[in-house]
Length: 186
Image 1: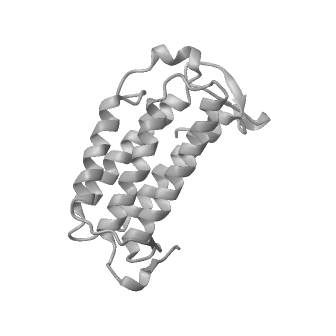
Image 2: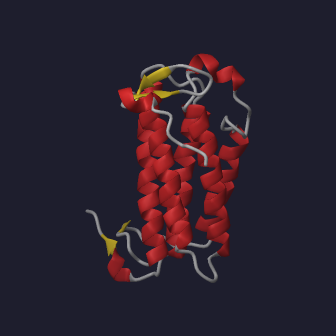
């Protein structure tokens, strides 16, 4: 039997990749923990995909894998960032650029209303909107790292910004276009 507990965190600390320990409430675990929550929220959305949602399913699964790359990068102290491997434990510019293509692919097929969208047009779009909010929270936690001078490379921040836009685009594509779901703002 594989034991998943180590008891090392019983004191409220957690280990970083390539060494070092920090409090579990530190900005770094907050950031990569929020990324983990976003990946899990995307999993809930992916589980709601049905027949005809294969494209969203594949894009969400890819994003979940990429969020694990982002999490690995964020779980590494800046002084060890040189040990990270692009695309495996470090977010790349290509990953950001690819998300821009995903955004464009969905938005080219969506007619957005001129007003705010109230989540819940369909089960899948509602779950995607929850995932988008989780990605945005992760982005805010990474901004905290940046402001504290603890972010070795801002590409991970760029990725999260595009990821939330990509999930928004997927949610609008999955929405049932019901005019009553749109809230106007003056």
